[in-house]
Length: 103
Image: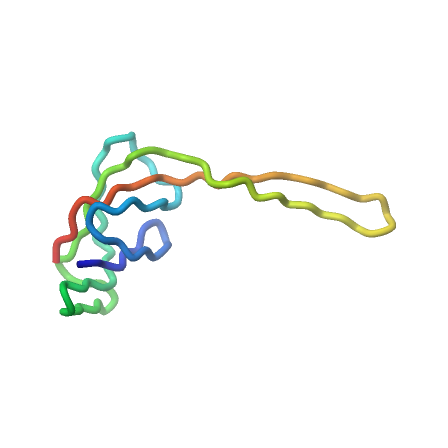
């Protein structure tokens, strides 16, 4: 059984007992969260597609922690002008554990 869920503006294919790195969300570690914005549910070949969401379907989970992603290097240069700028960026994510999918 899996579901496609909209979490903080991004779509994720989730199954039970799966860890997902979603964009940063508010909440303490260990707090439970529920997502009502379920776009599709597949239960052993029986597919329910929402218009735009599946009514009565929920995905529940809990926040495992807040982590940072890999560093992305941003390098700008203009040739022959002596202009070089190097910056780094680390995106913040929330690690979620999907506990239950109800249809």
